[in-house]
Image (cartoon, rainbow, N blue to C red):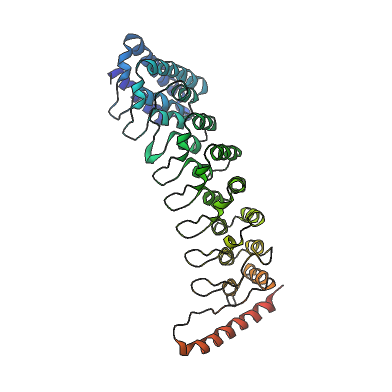
Length: 383
């Protein structure tokens, strides 16, 4: 790369180092103006010099895209510099389109950086005004579409989805699509973006990451009712999907104590088998609700009698009622959990597994007696 352009790149790095210090705002101004003037002179003298690459693999396009990250620089100065880069970008797109194909050492393509930085004009030039299939990747397998969702540039998201719909299904190194990340953040716009992605490619609702988590797992686990509703309303069978722990969306939202999502799921999901599905440890959603000690979660699970199996046993033979009885030190919440189960007719189980036939009857009697004693104690303390 021409030494003058390398000097400009150094200016960019210095701006990033001092941009958060309010006392240095004048220095930021001077650096950007100097950088802009430098590139402008190189462009006028010999445009071919702009085709160089820094030791880190960055082209002028990479540097242009990084301008969008200067969110704390004075608006007027930033916009002036960005206008300069728009001019450079248009010129190079015509004279050296191959530069858009250069990926730097960090694995960042110019298109990825422009999308991450929110530079819609640059993205517009590359995506809409060019017929070349330019690379769109970033680090860790992220794409330009991932970047727009993660950094909240939804106007660019719409542009990419319309022009490059194949990006919708692309997964990063964790197996996550853009919809996984949409389901991980909450803004009003996220719901609209989720609708857009689902309408453009319905298969994205069923793509699971490396832990077998679907976008619905993420939405339910984060407590985002609107996105959960959007997915289930259009693709109700996504509720059947389980992750590597054997957990569905009911398990996940209860594990994170997201009451409002649970109430929505209880209301709109018609498949009772899913309500009683066991994870890899044998826990049903009701088991997890009881273990959480949250009486509101348990009450929501038991609202519609007959739908939830209150007496199913997990791997260690505990029923939900067994888990609710915790001895003399039970808290008020645990007592309330027990009351909800009792009112729903929940029963005590075997409590302990039996390995020897000769011990079975005796142990069963003792286990039931202990449970009854605890039940009487709790009943006496009941408000």
